Image (tube, rainbow, N blue to C red; front, side, top):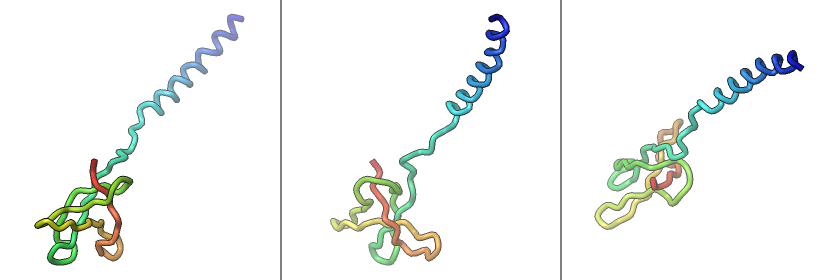
Length: 87
């Protein structure tokens, strides 16, 4: 019985190590901010902070007119990626 208890100690240390490794991992920020661009006078001329997941569409009001903001496509650099408002 004594040998059985002594053999559980290394197992317990290993389990604590694994649990500690997973507990110390940082999680990604679910509300990562990205820069959105609205077309007011020329294409993509007004920038605003938005997020890339969930919620209402990102927009900006300029002179009483609402303009939807879009993210830039990584390949074409056109403002056509839908973004969402920060909460």
